[in-house]
Image (cartoon, rainbow, N blue to C red; front, side, top):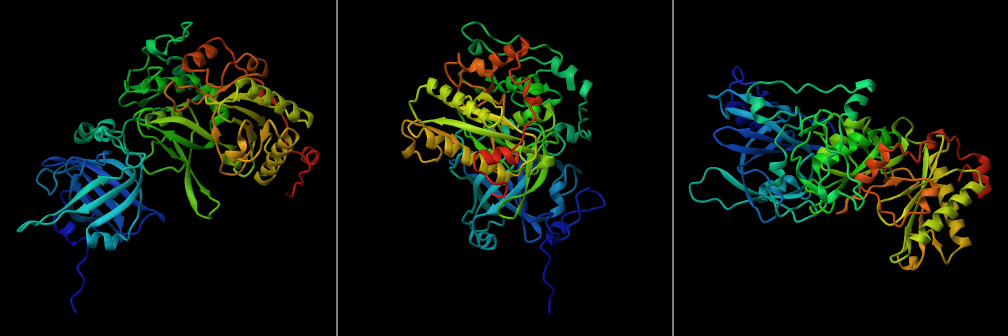
Amino acid sequence: MASLRSPLAEYNKRRNFGETREPKGKLGRGRSGRMRFLVQKHDATRLHYDLRLEWDGVLKSWAVTRGPSLNPEDKRLAVRTEDHPLAYGDFEGTIPEKQYGGGTVMLWDSGWWEPENDPDEGLREGKLTFHLHGQRMQGGWALVRMRSRPGEKRENWLLIKEGDEIAAEDGDVLLEDHLTSVSTGRTMAEIADGKGERKKHVWTSKGEDKEVKAVTVKTSKAATKPKDKAAKPAKQAISDETVLGVRITHPDRVLFADQGISKLDLARYYAVVADRILPHAAERLLSLVRAPQGVKGPRFYQKHASDGFPDEIKEVPVEESSGETENYMYVRDAKGLVAAVQMGTLEFHIWGSHVDKLEIPDRLVFDLDPDEGLDFEMIKGAAVALRDALDEIGLKSAPMVTGGKGVHVIVPLTARASWPEAKAFAKTFAQGFADREPDRFIATMSKEKRKGRIFIDWLRNERGATAIAPYSTRARADGPVATPINWDELDDLKSANSFHIPDILERIENGADPWQDVAKIRQSLTKTILGKIGVNEAD
């Protein structure tokens, strides 16, 4: 009986491994339960992009001649090529000129994929639909086989973007925005020249201060406030395309149209504001709102880390309520914030606990979310009433305007009580507050029942829930910022979205830090406090 032909026989036949550094073709197993996908930018006879999907121990491969497009109307030719070994997913470098595929190879994207139909059937029938979770390619995609013509030897497919929230009319922006390797940060020219991985910038506390002080935000005239509260022009200690050593691609792209804030401006903003945001956001699991083309383009919400993320964004495995384990993101320093901006992040949302004590929250958030049309004066009054009620049971709180419509009343805690206890406290407190003044407040999410009232959103106080980080920008045209304030300051505010980047920079320059004493607060959900509102520690 003849032996079955190896799916990598054609791959091995075409290569002389004494000449090329490409890995030998061996069947393998994936590194996790997820199936990997990757794209290699390949400058051989002609420049193209090799799409590879892990399946059945190999990488199924297509050469996309013009590269992937975000526009569903662009049907990009994808020529099926031989299966590649899983180890090829880590290959980046040069293939000798006289070898098969001779030229420069960049690892352009990497992540994992979810098939939406049976891959074996899809490959056989000529239609494979799938969802991508990469650093650059996201959302739904399809590979559709074209009808072969007489005498045609190659297998031609079309790569098509699904019409989802990731799709964009300017389909080529995906290729134009990303010109470096997700693995080494090198350009094609640097790879071709044999230059190694770029030297990493080492962030130290003394060096973390000098570099940040050398960065200020350059805002356009459109960002100037009526009272000329614009930031000072940027100092030239760092080149226009790097911030804290992180290379910013398309630095002039306007992200917040109404304020004229560019991608470079935003990266510099987070470098400057790092000392304020990191005490509240560092070492916490993050969910990111990413909009690489700015607030006018598509956006998506991402809580899981993907292969190919920059080193500045850290990963940690977390067991979810389903019992499955996923990798989550967090940052440790200012470079992590800037790296997230480079990836198109406009909003940072944080967990209520730190990564080293994930099951023990150290903050509570009560989000006062008003019904449409309610006056901001009512919301301010509600926040003060909530503060007073918390104060009565022995808990201090601090206010933050969200950059949207509402106010967050935040209760800092010493990590002691568990998530179930925190959730039980928050739910009971909010419901009791609403029961006392049912005409003003509601503690359930129902839109219909919220008419004319303020929803006390306590649901942010459970494991896995997030809240907007202090000093984070919001993904809206005018780029408002979620801003910590003090209780006296709240009284004079006209709205929850009145602070913008120039205002925050002015506050920092003037030394204003309304939460400077929050870190000194020592309080926890003790048995006594839980008992005051009728919550047992075992609830």
